Amino acid sequence: MRIYAVDCDAPPDRVWKLIAQPERWSEWSPYVSGAESLGSPEVAEGAEGCVVLRGGLRLAARVTRVVPGESWTWRVGGLTVHHAVRPAPGGRSRIEHAVEGSAPPWSIAAIAYGPIAGLIARNIARVAERG
Image 1 (cartoon, rainbow, N blue to C red):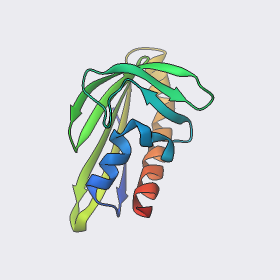
Image 2: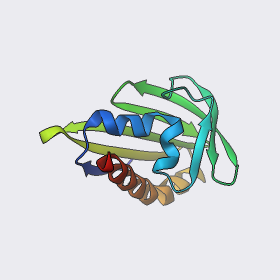
Image 3: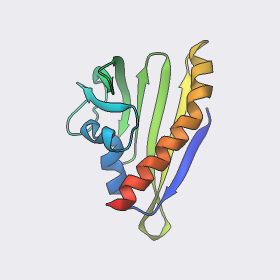
């Protein structure tokens, strides 16, 4: 599993709120408008619901692990996506995303989605830095 990471000038708690609060995902994702039943205000371990894409398409999702303030992992279809924010020197953050596919064709989808995860990490950094 490859990790896509971006350094960010915003503090970790600001970044965490962006990645862990489903109602904020539309602020940085070009294709997600929100989520249903995945936790509120933050994602909750074991929550099952869906991610809502722009245009209304709903994809079943399950939050598999949460380390509050640090990382969370979920499964969407056959993809496992891991989101993390790490403290960095000077009050900064490091945003990390990793994508893994369970088996073909999902393993191929994970390879294709990886660079998109990197772009999304940059979007999160940009939004977090704006405050």
